[in-house]
Image (tube, rainbow, N blue to C red; front, side):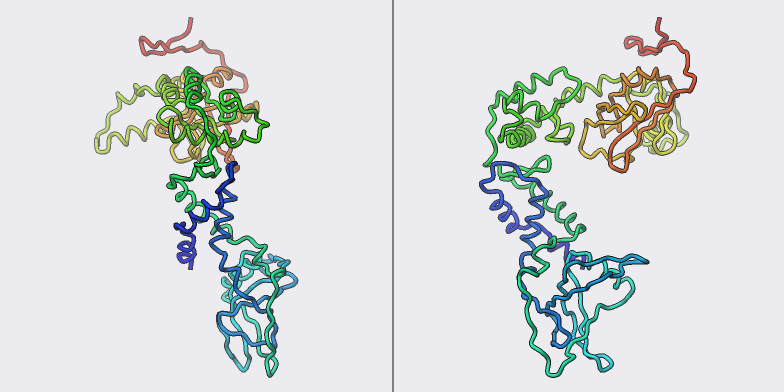
Length: 422
C-alpha cells in the first residue's frame, strides 16, 4: 500500500507542465510550500470528483460506493485518547456481506482528517469498520451529497507523511528543470527573472575580497543593484541575484547560509580562512605515533585525532593548537548543519551570538579566536558544543571558579613552535 502511494506521488511530465502553467506570468517567486500544495491538489484532483452517497441504514450499498457519514462525539484513538471529528467523513465500501443474518458493509477511509487516527487505531486493534445497511425492505433510493458539505473540498489533499514524500520528489524534479529556477525555498520560471547587469557581480566579488565575514543577498541588492527594500521588485531581485550567482558565478561565489535570502562569500576567501588556521596543519604528535598492526593506518590515525581530545557526546578539551586557531574539530555526524558553511552559535553564558564557519570535509569549526581570547582559554579547558532540539547551536567555555594565572602562549610561525610571550 505504501509503495503504491509513493509511486503515485512520482513527478512526471504532466506534473511539470502543470507547474509551468501555474508559474506562468508570475513575476514574484513563489514559496516552495505553495507549489507543493498546488501539485498535491493537482495529483489528487480525480479523488474529489466521484459522487458520494449519503449514508442511510435503510439504503443498499455495494463494493466501490462512496458514502458520507457523520460521527458525532469522541472517537478512541489510543489508550485513554480521543478525537472529535467536526465534519462528516467519506468512506469507501470495501465489501457488502450478510453475516449471521445481518446485512453489513465493511468500510475504509482514505481522507486526511482526524478520523484517520480512529481507523488506524481500529486496524491496530484488529477491528473492522462496519455499518449496517438494507434495514428496510424494499430499500430506499440513496441520495447524493452536495458540493458545499463535501469534506474533500476543504481538507488537505495529503497527510503529512505523503507531503514529505512529495516534497522530496518535487525537490529532485525541480533541480533538474532547466527552465525553472529553484533556490532558497522559492520557485519561479527563469523567463520571468529580473535582469541584473554583469558589472554588479564583478563589484560584489571585489567587495568580498579580503573580508572575513560573508554578506547577505539583501545587502547586495540594496547597495549594488540599487533596489530599495521597500520596493515591490526587491524580493524578485533577491531571487534573481541568487539564481544567477548559483548558476553563472559558482566558480567564484558560494552561498554560505540559507537564512533569509542567504549569505555569500568568495570560495577563495573561505579556503584561505581554513588554510591559514594552525589547526589545518598536520598534528606533530601524529608523526610520532606507531602501530604494531599497520593495517588501515590512515583510518586509525584519523580516528585518533578525532577522539583523543573529546569526552562524551558534546564535550571537548581544548588544545593550544585549537585555542590559537580559534577552532574546534567536532565529532563527525553528530550535528546537523545542512548545506550551511556560515552558522550562528550562542554563548550560553553571555547569550551573545557569534558567526562561525563549518568545513564539513574536516569537521572543523572556525571563528572562536576572539571568544577564546575573551575567556583567556588555557590548554585542557573544557568546551561544550551542542545543537538544541530546535536546530540552533550553542556553546559553553567552562572556566575555573577561581580563575587561573598563567603566561600567555603564542605561536612562532617561523620556528613552528609555541612559546611563552614576553
